[in-house]
Image (cartoon, rainbow over all chains, first blue to last red):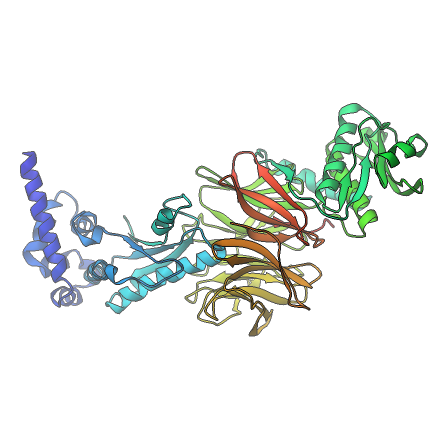
Length: 189
Length: 424
């Protein structure tokens, strides 16, 4: 029974992944434009046919909007990856984060009611006030990438925590690298 | 006298407002200045514990000033009379001046505290006063006496009756604390599970502006210190940070991301009429309003963080620092002639002072992590945040860099000091 469940989950995850990789293409946005914002739960299922139908089925005990939430939480989905790391004193989004941000952009375009918060963080070096501003630049750099990928500005909030909420409080290079980061958080998660 | 009792009332008010204070600072002097005036503070005559505390507080204040060296006072007579002073013994101990005093019961349950400052070589009184105070105000009276002694001997205003604000961080808790300049009477005025940074005193010492993250983003609050009443400075979108008061206390300059990036805005102290001050497209933050009305701030508009200044009414900014490639967090001295700032060299963050007339820069501390400098209102001492044994501590350095002191809290990590103004 357990292994069967695992199999089903794996299948769902694979399907979700397939669905995601196809989303940057035209299908989903077109569906979105036809379906108005308050009917968004329908759009993903329609847009990516079989793939999202299984995702929906897996979450069928939960109200329908949960299909999107499941995709966000699926550890196999790029949508579950929420961290973007930076070089020292830099707010440039490195190329390696392009696929991740493309996946989030696709999701946000499919789900026009979804809102994402980009939280900028820095390491502890430098003044607290400067780091608050640097964290803001980092969060705005992610916002810029998302809007260039077609996400509406109104779906994106930016905030900076500067150096005040370190993920790793140690004063080591490894900790600094962990703390130079933007976190992505969806409203209602 | 009148103004003094009024201040005592304000202090009492503060004590009543909040209850638990617990991040008391202890002071540890680690440097020695060059020309220090040797002074013997003899024990005060009167009921033991209080009299003992009086002279101990005065002695510690004077020692902390950096300009005065306290001479061993063991075995000196505890008397307020000049006739009882053993002048030849004081000469042997190397004292140029001595403080004597007494405590005696006065009318209405008050205590009469009298003191004299006496020139040892000339054997004559330099100054002397009597205060009638309540028992709870003895410590404040000792600070007042230390201020008078310090001013008489050095010609500079004493800052022992001032207050410090700072942030204490313990696991899962941030407190904005207000304490006497010697770290005693530490009273938390804000308790939060979210970070608090950048406290800034209003010029009259009645209010603190600070940044709290309690709303899941950085926001500026303005709080009445004695009543605890507070308000958001602005409900604008984005992050609001780094508040600083205008010299007359009617306006606040702050950094905001409301228009994208981080730029400086000026508003009334009640948040009214907010207008944008800078327009650089770069990071502009950490403003400080100088006595001449200009605002000093840090900006990376030239490629690296440097210090600039701009009229409080806007216009073009002028670059002020040219040495090094990372200069941050300017604070202008009360006389407007110099500023202290944080200078990075390699991976070390150190305090430096720049004289505006000569443009000369003097490095005051060696780091490696010295930040958030704040001038004492007499411009002679600078309190700052440092790290000692892996823990955040407060430290103070004399403006000439010669005397350094550590102000250590018992358990919490302490940071973000702001030195309050002289009491009215």
